[in-house]
Length: 345
Image 1: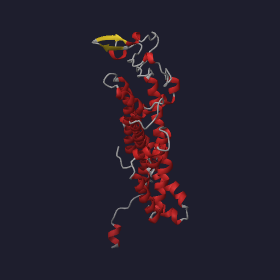
Image 2 (image 1 turned 45 degrees about the horizontal axis):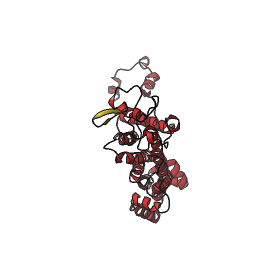
Image 3 (image 1 turned 120 degrees about the vertical axis):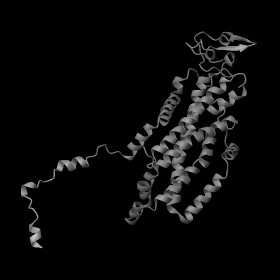
């Protein structure tokens, strides 16, 4: 046996060379910078062109709505019966039939601005309504009111729905059972019935709409948060924190809430257009914002009455409402894909 071993050729010491550490460092080098969850979600969102366009549209709409008192050419409630039902007229676009202030009467085109005695330097970019109020100013203020209702609905989701769902999911057992039965009772009452009952006590306006939203708007958020809490509270890191003696409040705030933030953000964004449409519906049927205040729903209701003769009174507020709702929904869809870690690039 030893003779066979000695037959193998010996390797000289100089033939050994240590491995280069630089080669291993090059192989282990990270070629792309590390990204946090927020940066990775933003990177995914920027790749969604529809969501980014919707985001910029919403930013512009919000800025214009906030600056409505400065941008509006007239006061939203200022009336002038002599200037009633004027068509749109925009300086520099008089060659375009829709923006030259002309109307067709008895088969011929008539300059309604000259007939109403409007000065040459006065323009109504979107026309006027039956009381001579500037439609552009009312659309700007109406967008402001509608967006305010949407923001209030989002805050109610965060302040009521998230804690309610998290407590229900964390406690479980009889507490969860009682809290869910309460949600079933509340969800069984339609929002319209709640508003009608509130009108027996309160006057029509923003306060009654906010109370109706406070009663029923947060139910969907509470159920989603409860479902996610039930799923996460049995994870290993949550059980480890419980075994180490952490308080339930700290576990919910430090471990559960960050892991369900994506669901919360998406549902919050979806709740805004839902609340805006709810307010527009109430205002359309006469249970929303009272006159002379303006909202997109009241403007659509006013334009609906004279749509056959003055279609611009309904088209412009309807277009603004459609753009806002579509933008919010497209942005929410983009956020849902961006915040989902299972989504592949």
